[in-house]
Image (cartoon, rainbow, N blue to C red):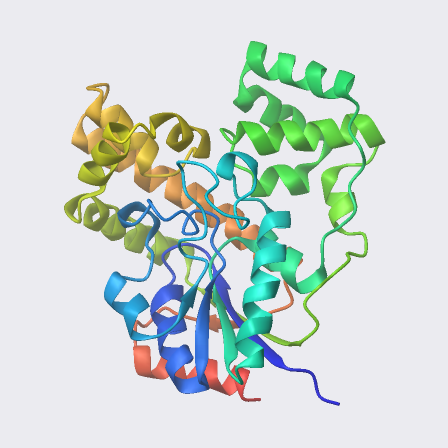
Length: 318
């Protein structure tokens, strides 16, 4: 018996995944499933590059509003409303199975490679971390800061460090805890056979754009984010009492908007910082997809949407 088909459009930020995903959903009889760790938060619209509300109303979209910064509101939300690969694998598996049961095709779209891997290959086993180890690492984090711990991680587990932002305190600390508790780096654990993968005929497409051209796209996208109301959206989140959970995300764009609203930087400095952090994110994403994902790669340099769509369909219909 042939397995059901699940397709995924992945790649670095600003490569055009959202637009291609929307087009493919129409061509393949599909429904879009979010595969982005920031787009799953319902309050984050402008700064995450979500499909527009009009696009989400035109065809079915799933998991784009699955979590709230305000905290759990249903069984779908984990404690503290923090997205994780484990949470994503569970809820995305249900969403995809429901789509398949309707005779439709799940079209996953996003740049969170670990989320895709958790769904496609299953969750890798990880060791129990004793409380003493956790407390020791958290104390070092408080004393030295996440950037220093990220440098430590880069020496012992360069593969994991390459995909984590230096300011991502939660994940950097977790990687060091696993290393100290087990003697094996987190990348070693992630390479172990996983459980509860979504069994399917997976067709994965990575959109790629040369770094220099992508940097120009990122610069233009940064300007567009600010013009589209990123600062106003951030101001509203702060007014709603969501400053603390927003800060915990260390989300590109929102961090800088917070600094701007607090008077700690200028608009120009905020834009420059957003562009820099987005380029750094894109580099980590490229590294992850190059080494961790078995994907057909499609150049997205020209901006010719018709040609890009035809190339993608050749992959998915092959």
